[in-house]
Amino acid sequence: MTEAKNRNVLFVVFQRGNMSLEMLIIGAGPAGISMGAEAVASGIDSDKVLILEKAPEHSYMIRKFYPEQKLVTANYKGQAAVCNGVMCIPDYSKSETLSYLDQAIEKHNINVKYQETVWKLEQLKDGSFYVSSDKGEYQTKTCIIAIGMMGKPNKPDYKIPSELNGKVHFDITSKKIENAKVLVVGGGDSASEYVQYLSQEGNAVDLSYRKDSFARMNEININSLMALCEREKTELILNSNVCELKANGEMVEVVFNEENIPNRLYEHVVYALGGSTPKNFLKLLKIEFSGEDDQPVVKEGYETSIPGLFLVGDLSAGKRGGSIISAFNSSHEAMKKICTDYLTCKI
Image 1 (cartoon, rainbow, N blue to C red):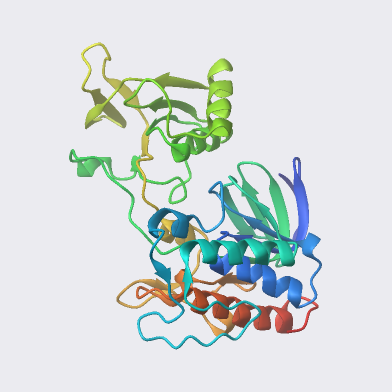
Image 2: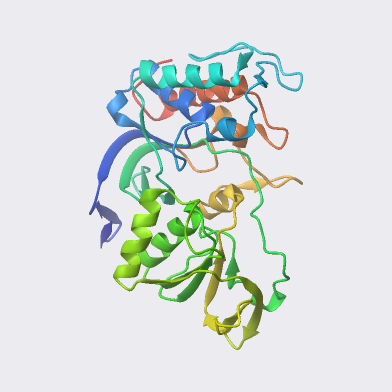
């Protein structure tokens, strides 16, 4: 994207894969899918609604953490199983729940793009949103964040010196890193995606991984990583184990366990060891947080402090979490607010 500024007017020119939307939804779990269903049911053209999902399939958390024999219960922690919107389930098995969500996507003709990670979201002067991912750029009138509960990133088992604060990171949304020498540590899809994004920001990026091949990385990310290596934008340090970080002037000195790998100096080190940090992502968007638990502020219809930006599902339920039905209901309430204040639609 390029910007041309003329006094108080901001012109946005998209350079690749742009799409102008009524609604963009981040996350294809029950909340994101029901948000798409609510939008289409309210009269919004399905071509103007898009869900972006970083996983290869929808409802990744259900697929990953629910045993096959475990019921996905409608009633959750004493919350009444009352459905207010277009989607509703009884007590279902894991496979029945996933099948129901499959059918909802098909029935409402919801457009879902998988294995696409959002890197940037900002509100433009006209109130719309610019969203940049690893695969495209979009402009949308409203934006809904339907990602999972706030988690903590996995950290290495060695201590990181306090004087390296601001130079060692566990995500790439908390601090903008550009035109620097950076080491990414990890071997999964997030590690490759971090390398791709950091390279786009003008950084010289190395990737340290403890094995000799990337068994946990999907083919698209492997190919993207290899392409960066061929263009000498990235160096792979395979069969390497970081065992210590030291402060060395303004740089981070990285010590490897292997005798054949000498210490290296970097301006930043980024760990991609698993875990999630959606709180950092939300705070980077300047969404207001409050309370002892430092939770995002949501107003009527699950709208954040940023007009036109909504949180639905687990993020709107607080630390206790919620049921799938409560996720469905949060989408319905958000849709009512959106139809009232932002889009031409009707619940």
